[in-house]
Image (tube, rainbow, N blue to C red; front, side, top):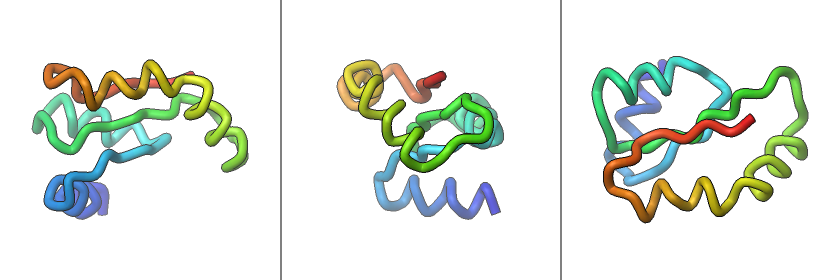
Length: 75
């Protein structure tokens, strides 16, 4: 299933946002696109994830502006 999401994101030009380490491993193995935002936080709500993404927006935005960057992790 992870690979199906990976292929879908690659075909559509999407960025994957996930707490699943498998996408980080796929990025290291297969390269990018798609690019990955790896949320490295334990159990938390969707609102908390939104807060992390908003807090780290400038850092995350580097994915778009840096062609050599394929994955960022937020804590």
